[in-house]
Length: 65
Image 1 (cartoon, helix red, strand yellow):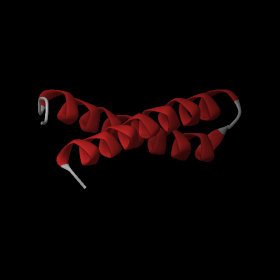
Image 2: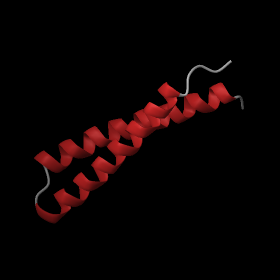
Image 3: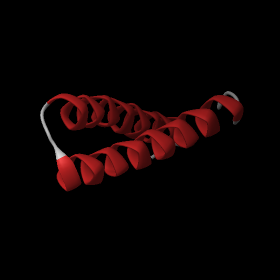
């Protein structure tokens, strides 16, 4: 697998993490209460942070040939 294809798959994983974060944040705010809402919210913000780091890395690493 070439470097370009690898970066494509890593960026797709980052986008999936960001989409999961959106869904989990909405779930924790509007459907859950108490400790479970806090736990799901923490997981969502972890996904948000990791997804953001992945996307920033892919963008700043520049083009591949």
